[in-house]
Image: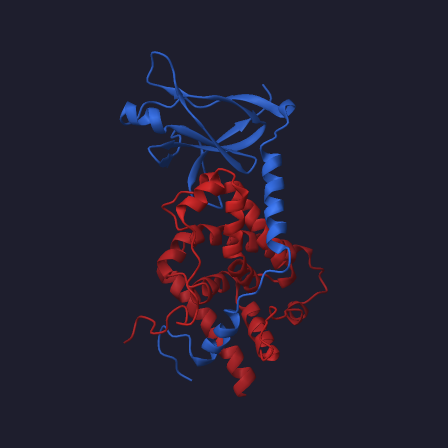
Length: 144
Length: 199
């Protein structure tokens, strides 16, 4: 049977009708998922302080209008799979912006949010977050 | 020569795809668990449908969908509104499904053939008592034979209703390649089901 280009064809259309059926959520399924996410989030926000090391962010040079940066410059860091963000602070008598924060040992990905746009640190190795497709920068933290 | 499909990705009777407004997403980003629950309610069924089509073992679909929503919740602070929310969700879901298939493949013992895996496939639960169980099972077996990289695109386009432009953003694959993958998946299903039902 010849099918016109770009059309799935009659028998495939019938198959699609079957595949498009939406499965219902089982009893308690939504509640279970939400509870699981809440548990994970609670663990995420309670790091073990004994395992944290100080991490000084790369110093961020002034890009664009300073007034705009003051309101929008933020660093986002991927802590063991969880993104957290915190504001950068301008260093006194300088055009540099930085932040110091505790971080666990290991490999972490970070990026700067400047005027609502995620921007990489051009001096660091680049990584791609597999879920988001947004480029980030990599830092590896070990014992001093 | 016709170059564009005359068949829409979704039939007219298909309800509009659920959406979430930015207020709801922003509340969830700040940790509002009730806002997140609304998001799960709106997208759960679509995610389950996609996972059941993608996974080698459909019994894993429930776990994979749960893992997807947990990852979504953890990653929400990084969500940018310029992305379509469901595109972002299905990117995470696709990653989870591929990972699950990889693990399933590794854990299968050497004496389990693909045929036996295909035999375990079953249709999703349907409230419609007249549903043709045998047809549904044959469709799912035929779909399971389609290579994963073609199956994913086929499902995103024809079942989930994403345009090729949207799928390109989700997968990073160029539209010309996407159309070829959808065509190959359609060709396989057509050949398999035609052989089965038309002799």
